[in-house]
Image (cartoon, rainbow, N blue to C red; front, side, top):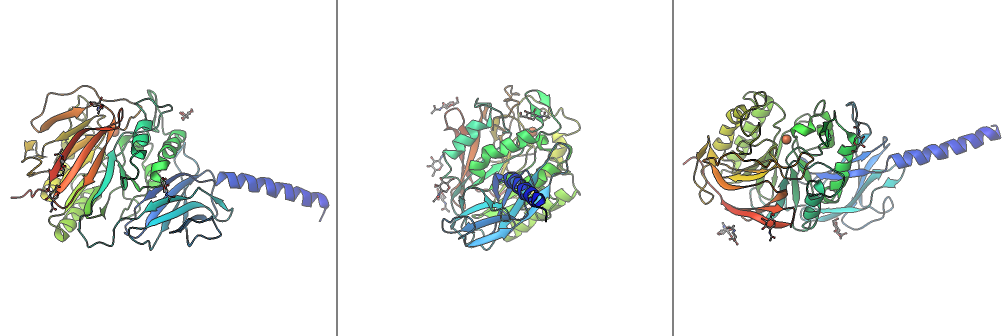
Length: 432
Ligand SMILES: *[C@@H]1O[C@H](CO)[C@@H](O)[C@H](O)[C@H]1NC(C)=O
Ligand SMILES: *[C@@H]1O[C@H](CO)[C@@H](O)[C@H](O)[C@H]1NC(C)=O
Ligand SMILES: *[C@@H]1O[C@H](CO)[C@@H](O)[C@H](O)[C@H]1NC(C)=O
Ligand SMILES: *[C@@H]1O[C@H](CO)[C@@H](O)[C@H](O)[C@H]1NC(C)=O
Ligand SMILES: *[C@@H]1O[C@H](CO)[C@@H](O)[C@H](O)[C@H]1NC(C)=O
Ligand SMILES: [Fe+2]
């Protein structure tokens, strides 16, 4: 072979190798639960396609490639929505032990490019079904990413959660995730820079704790495929945006207020079936349910004031509220309204007992993550079902699971990282 061709090939291969290597550096590392208790999913973003998207993991600290105990090869998924580019990598760690710390990194095995080493700890999934084991989880909605660090940004929520990272075991973002369809007051069709910046801003949390989501109206873009590909949840079927899982004796159900939820829709049928099955197996267990849109809220705003006709809260209530009542859903948590408020136990606008003896679901709105649109400041007159506890300051919720009869809830203000509302909810039986 001609020496020049060899030289050319040598240089070309080297350059292309450098480019490929940079383009498979993992970003936006996120943990999520799967349908199996002893698994953990990791998803991460790369600019280019990895030949072998891989998780290396071990119960001991390790150096990538040489000495991790386990490895798992995953899949690469492409965005095919206009304005979105790059690859989602996803792989699953299997056969994990309960209550065990694992170290892991992700990357491309074929080009030997790896993320830093992260760690997470599995929960006590080997405990008997339904046994309540104390733990803390956070709930927040409507966060988004904004350049800078004003109180109206994700920075405070992320930093305040990071300050408690050793006390929290799992995170729930109840929709309106990145606000990648908004920049200041301008609507965008979907902006991947913002989408990715958001994920990078939460990755100190999401690389260490499972980060569970449900879609909000600001996650819809042209269609919901960007959302479902990025946030892979413990769904029964790949195309679903609704799922449930059991964690330390609590049954969590996350559903989508951005899909059909009318009676006879596939989501409605799924929700009813899930609740029915769970209640059969554990009549007295806690059920915590969440989605983006609230059933009860009292800011002056179209959804809460029942002015929205196309997306009507009345139809939402009519479609789903009976299920919450019939299957004794103890707590329902949402966002959408950029405010914090909580109700007394309520069904069909009627007060049903109190937090010491609830006869219906207690509803919490925590759409206070600090998004680009700002807070909702104007309130309707007090409704019958209100506790009177409502505020427009930004913050996030902590659900502290105490035992089989008590849940503790705290709302933390971002401005001073301290509790501004707290209550204990006693387990109630709704139907007698
Ligand atoms: C595990 O990760 C957390 C959060 O990133 C970090 O603070 C901690 O030092 C890590 N633990 C070990 C043993 O490396
Ligand atoms: C997307 O957002 C980034 C960051 O705010 C901005 O620089 C860029 O211009 C936006 N792209 C479009 C197409 O609006
Ligand atoms: C649960 O915790 C509460 C609050 O500490 C306590 O009053 C109650 O007796 C406990 N219930 C059980 C079943 O342990
Ligand atoms: C924290 O800030 C909130 C909201 O401004 C305020 O209501 C509360 O009193 C403050 N708490 C402390 C301990 O400073
Ligand atoms: C909730 O219960 C715990 C444990 O009994 C107690 O320490 C705490 O003060 C209670 N909180 C409220 C707001 O009632
Ligand atoms: Fe919303």
